[in-house]
Length: 270
Image (tube, rainbow, N blue to C red):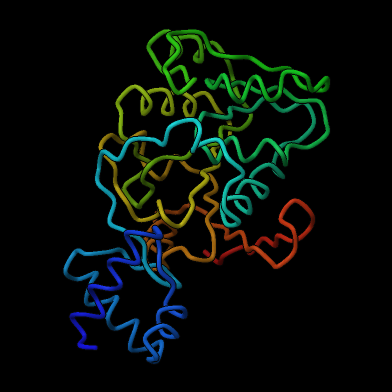
């Protein structure tokens, strides 16, 4: 197989699977991992994909819209669950926290600590999932309900600004040295408000979102106190974010059930 044919096949696999791993490609094409990495580097330089630590992911458009609720609110991938669990470990008794409407926010719910604390959310799905937990006080922002079940309009933004929060858990379609960004202005504005009224901001940053800039910026990366990503994250993107003075941690998935104690947290030097 010629190199151009191999790269066309890599693009096909990337389109079908949403990511490719260098180790698996090396086995498939019976080549060394170094040869595959050279292919991926050449393809990245041509703007065909974005390299990660272990492989590659597709190039994101600046206005990729969120997944529909039936796809967004699922169990989450192992690396997303690792990030969710690590993030939830920062919640302490009597904290007041903002948990948004992203899929990775929903993924946090199964890891929330069994202590009394308060949740403020703009997601009907999140509020409905937590409403029967007796130890929690749950506040749902008011405003126009979108078909996704989230509330992000001006009323919700004004409602949110009545509170003071201990922790805001933010995420976005893109997270880079330039800041956290998303596809729609109203979502960006709500996220910005949550950060401004919080004592501490923790960013949930799966590798597929790292190093990417979306349409509307929620705020500069320097607003983030702690960024949590996973092992597949781009080393270059991590170093660029750390150069802005942001602490970055990597959540590592082990072979055990991620709902148990099979997730390690690596504190990345920086």
